Length: 373
Image (cartoon, rainbow, N blue to C red):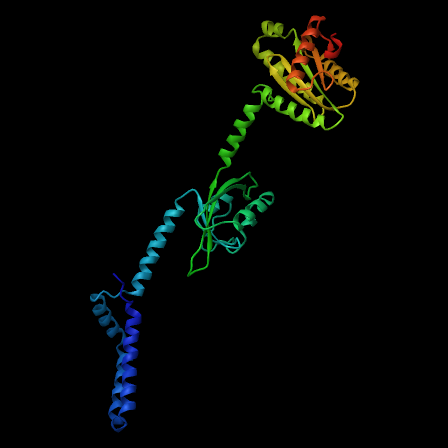
């Protein structure tokens, strides 16, 4: 069923019609000039003096016929909007409205908490009217701008990015955005921002634990094997060599038996730190398991360079000055790509065989796989 017109414009039309009707009658009957002038004057004065009374009476009558009040609908919409906004302000997520050129039009109160700023009234926040990207980390602005410029109606686009906090703390946000196209109003972008800093850090911790040894925080077998593949692939395109040093701690079982496993763990941490400090940043030191470590050396040109690094590591452990560490020495087996192996799997196997050979030669020595035969 079609809605009837609003009351207010209807009353204005009726009032205007009375005056217009008087003028028309006056124009048609010039002989009764005085009478119609009096009627016109009477109608005009009447409308001015008792407009409110007449409005109220006419409003009641028109409402009985189903006419709607503009003011009532405006008040009703304002109440609905206020309730809607109050509900949005209860959310931990930030709800925002942007112009199609990315400027902030409206936002909810959680904005203050998300950015760690002074609590502003959301209707007078100084950020309104500014580009949304002004509040995003510089490195993430391009990706966000591209996403906003490519939004389509009825499609939700999601992006994780960092926002600037007043306390400079890391602040990861997951933003969901969509484009609202209205034929009668200007199109806008609506978005929801959710703080994912903690979950993002947790994901990084899990990813780190999956790739690193829990005791020494060194790369584990999984990460080592990935880096071996990368190093060999790179070496295939160059004339450089890749070396793998398999290291075993001699007499480490004696440390555990005499001083306990806690002392053994502390010794493993200390040795891993010393080994790492004597390597280049491009090298990888990984814990293979137990008392075994593996060193991945990239960009090697001469075998003598590899031997020098292995000897440097042995001397560094020999120079440890506490009583427990003096019980331990290093046995090292080395294999080289492409001299000894053409794949990462073979390189690892051959370095392990060279280590076994070093142990059989009295320990505390370095053996190259190529020299075993």
